[in-house]
Length: 388
Image (tube, rainbow, N blue to C red; front, side):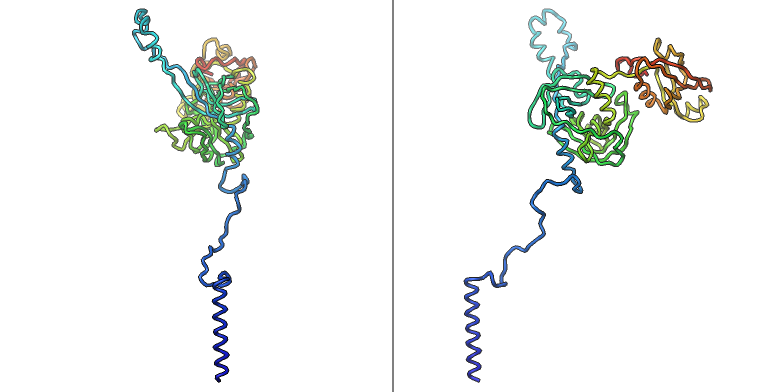
């Protein structure tokens, strides 16, 4: 018995001694008091994400942002005509210079633009550069360059600028007709002058017109936040392709309220090509004042349905006057294309080439007539704003 107890005592002593040595020199071998951080699932080191990554539009933004520029304009805000002393020769002799400085301050404004050609062509809104004395373009790489106007089209609110720099990153145009309501879009511009900004939303509606913004309206409506300074910037799809030029907002406060409008790429391309080719946009014109057919008018004219465009007036000496159109006529078809309302009538006529002979189908005194007409050239916007 004593021998067994001695063996047990020696075994315990040796074990305690071994444990002491291990804890003193090799503590990592013991599980007791383990304070190491537990292993967790971690994402891999940052790599360039695919553009298909759910919830991210980084690829689209990175593709388009280098093509969106800031535009700064300045002009003289002369108020000398409001000063009764400016016409007095003696007063001007002594104080003319000082008055010129005080009455003609520089007005500065800002907007955005989109590089559409590597050779320095830039698209923006007409209202961004309207009446500007000086135009400067700030590129995303920090360079600031003077720009000149290639041409403008006030009736669609588009303008083309040129800077004398080559090898610029041009944006890619989306295929016309590939956009649908519900598509995700990004708006890129310089809101309130804070710097280049990207906002996200969806296409809320297509073909918006009768807004009273432009003469020719075919807007994309979006809820992507668009604010002052975004005008002329890019509306892009999730691939970074240009689907429209941001143009206007509906707002009671001056800021975004979730209703913004962009000029679709189909119209942008058509106007841009004409401006580049000939410095302006040439449109067809017949010289009438038009009005939509309301249900009340349809009943008054005993029409089966409220369609077509009412001729409210005819410009004297115009193609319409020469063709025999009269106030009260209702246009039903132009060159074989149905007239739904005044907006479609305006677009159909403007798309026709001047000097082209076409036929008009119209209703007069409950009788349908067909008249030949030679399309004229649309005059300047000041003359043709309410005429077609």
